[in-house]
Image (cartoon, rainbow over all chains, first blue to last red; front, side, top):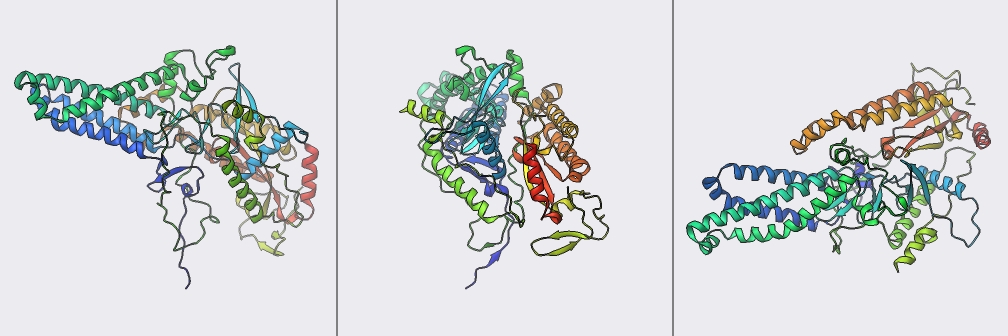
Length: 392
Length: 185
């Protein structure tokens, strides 16, 4: 029995490394664990539906019809910002192609010189001077690049993200350069919506109680109790988060930098990215240019890769089985542990060796291939092993 | 240097000569006249990567330092000119001023739905850049056996310069190119 050969165009998102899931043929990009995101959606939509069902008819008649109208607009804005944050590319940096990785390895080898046997090579760090401040660029063993300033590797999504803020399970995505302003506007508008619903719930209960008594009111509009509960707990967390991010924006810092204490002022280190002016910092973060994605998700793979697939090939919309979520903290730090790096490095070592085996240079006289040193791992890197020792 | 080809590209593997399509100029001077010719007839020797310059912060800028591997291939001033023009384009795209505020505020007022219909300023400049790189490749780099790759295809991390070698001169030039490369370093 012969297999049926089907040729189909393969889009680049299907071959992207990393632990993202893609929907709508590459238009939507999210993290793998989406459970908490669904909870966020449910809470927002559920609470708002209760508000529109129970409170709005009464308030529209007895106070003003503008109240539900404004609530609808605010709700739509919140949902738009949430979906925009969750579905967009946070600013993922694509991994280095083999030639670029080899080029960087050669540069590192040249810079290190000869390392005596048995000794660990020096840590892979590049120093750049930004605004009279020395900034260290670290090497990412997974992506095989020196991370640009402010970029960081997210262990959950397994990508380097530019201007990495944090990985937010509530939106089911990383928050980075491209979607930070949407995330901020989401928290801000959600704070306003929560305060709005909470306030008008109280107003509604008071107004109705004056007519019919408190217990009767609660019997007539049971949704109010639920709304008040949800809003009360949401208020503290979301308003607090909005305040925290407003503070970060005014200083032009990321959550990641704040947690690590990169610019805390010790040893006279100062934030080189800050304009030292709150208005300018806010304008840059919120009104800066909208950066386009450098991951060409919907581009077609080159001809030789889009080979004929058998009929038993998985469909393009198959999503890998979600892993069980063990996230407890709302903010997830970024650096991958050396244990995480091991399978990645082994996998990438296999990939590069198979790539070399498959495409030998076509000339008769083969030029000597640049000898790529054995792929360094965090175990052989002095700095990472020192920090690992500190952890345990 | 690259040897001249009279009738077409000589493929050393199959020992066949692939005739150029009628209407194309044959190489007389030993240089490639257009991109398609180069990509069909030449083989890749190596790639050089021009790194980002972070001295001004996180804005997109490339180093104007001239890589030594390109010494024999192209004049320093030409490459520097290309990189400086690219840097000015990126600066224009990332400029925070009146226009970016207007765009940001308008977009925010429409809950960013307008971005689904409209092209952002950055995307417009990226298109201009890609046209510029194409034009530079055709005019300056392809005739010297080089090819620039748009940085956006490499995550805006590097400006990749591919160095090609003429396949017809496969027997003699690789070693001479390699020895000249190593001597240039």
